[in-house]
Image 1: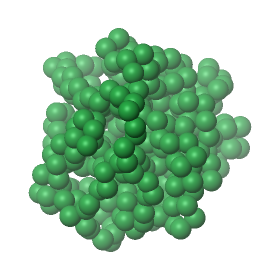
Image 2: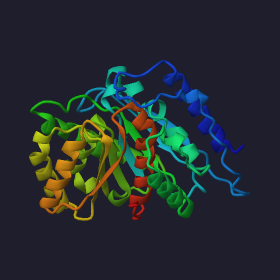
Image 3: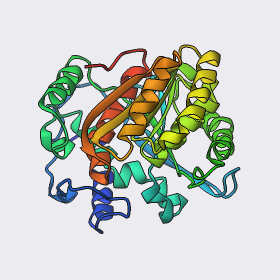
Image 4: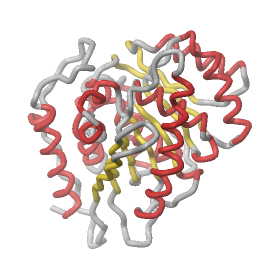
Length: 326
């Protein structure tokens, strides 16, 4: 077993402890629950004599920021050699993690949404229905496997800041501005300095789920010069908020015409209708974007299944100038 696999498995065991405590507050819907510790993850096949650098995890704590105390966990994927540089993805967690405090919340994608498991499984194809916790169509599953077989998943630097719950109410859009300043002016420059990041806007993306998807779109549209890709998974917007969001998107595209925009929702998502409305009005406004509607509800299980795979594979492609459209 390679050192990188051992590192991943150690992180997975930590995630098991977190999941074993029971469902988190944001868990909703009727999707079946299967304990994480009961899942058997195949070990990736040996890659030959090539010596790759193991994955690394960093934690940065900020006692002060424009939005209060912050933490950020940085996952640096395996690399073939010290000279290899990686794209950067900022991944924002959902509202269920906010009450845990910044340090635990920043670990949402690792401990609560099982990102290490997804990374490990993509090194041991084929993916199966159970990897998506049953929330995947046969066609989408075939697409994932064929895409990953043709072009294996290549790593990212995933930056996971704690998401402050400041984006509600009538001041939601203005409240996103201090968060954007912290992420773009403080956090990203440090990532570029202290990690093997490519360090360009074209190879930097932002995404998130639910509250995190709301944050990602607001931040991305307010700082378009910093991102090559702006996306949201099940982004928590009300239909009444569509007009100002479209205006932000239009202004962002004028500043950064090559910026890619993606919206992802699911068939039983609370925000399915607002996301479809947003997509329609973005199209009417001439804002090029991608809308994906996949199977699933709005729950932790969605995050652990379709959500994490959709996010990682899409950005793994898009931040390298590739496409991910079935």
